[in-house]
Image 1 (tube, rainbow, N blue to C red):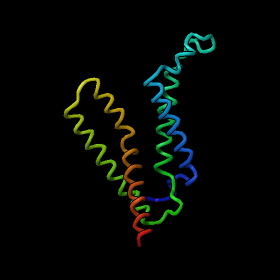
Image 2: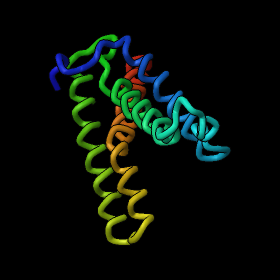
Image 3: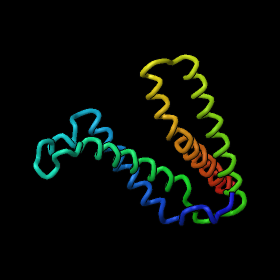
Image 4: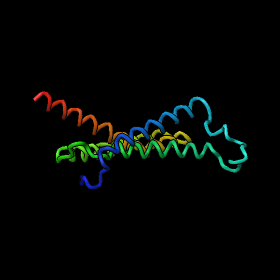
Length: 145
């Protein structure tokens, strides 16, 4: 994987912040109340559905955050890291589509739409988990040697 297509290392922090903000607001919004609802009927926002705008913010912050986390350079980006990155990306695609195929076979109706929506962010989540795990294992091996 060419490192020229990766974001600078310092952008990972921005990605973590965006992901946390989006994820927490998603959890709060799903479990407690409609955050955009308190502006409903206000003269300045008449005709604008604030909940839709707020949901868009949540989705965009989670997706952009995950992209920045997953595709930011490491402090030391060498060939071994590039190979781990490529292997993790391939593994993530296999896992995501394996799960998706199983869901296509066994899940129908409205529940399938939720599964399809989660399959959009699935590859990047699986990639980040696998890549970070492999980096952890590599660092542990280097400390033991």
